[in-house]
Length: 302
Image (cartoon, rainbow, N blue to C red; front, side, top):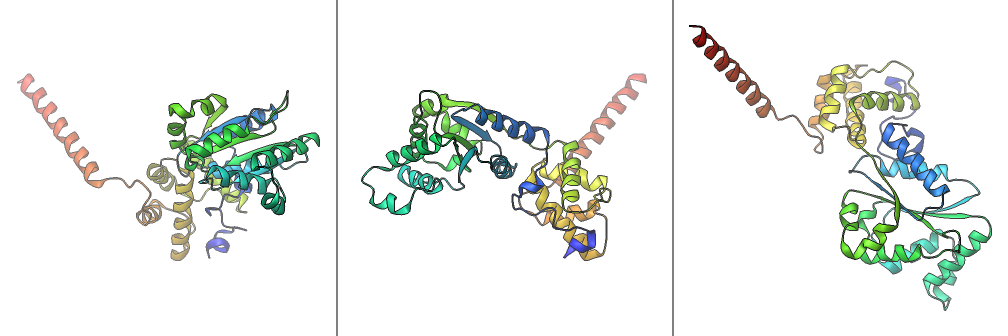
């Protein structure tokens, strides 16, 4: 594989959301700081929204790492396309409620969860529920989440919830029948795509973490093209860089040129390849306009 060829200790552009590769770019750092501040302040509902591939899951994993202390008990549900009952069962399991109790206890799930949350609070714990891909939650389950945040003492909420979702989540929450839930969201973060300068920082950061201390060996033209076709989406950047490194290794080269990046992009369906017909049409139009203006100017002189 190309790892030894380029001097990496590990592969730098894999798709797995490894918190060790978290890059402190503006939007992601602001979101992480907002989440930590909000949770420390005891806010009940927090929302993080971004387009597909913008780093929500990696941010979620980074937040889980940051909350790994004796103060917090975290519950993570990565696939929340669950009915209200299934959602409560998933939360109960994450809170280590005994399976036999779930089956045999005469109380309903809501009561069991409340008792567990109260026990954790009495022992000085804060419970945080994180839901990835929250746009997939049915309306009834979103309402069930709202009811769970009603579990509180006179001073603190027993359960804090962070929703990670695509922009469709905002559309869902704008429905009139979900207005009570929307009103409870105290902080909302949005992850923007990388800027052109952030792309360079992102590439260098991941390569250094992977063990390569050499200067950036993606050429400037390759990076310009990479940004153009990915529009700053981290997941697509990872896909194309991984493929480009494989192609360069196959050719025995140590620099990623624009041609190599173009080959990687042509093999990737999700990227926005430049439309050559539109480019040539634009050039032809520009030449025609310039000719007409020049001809008109000469006629005016004559």
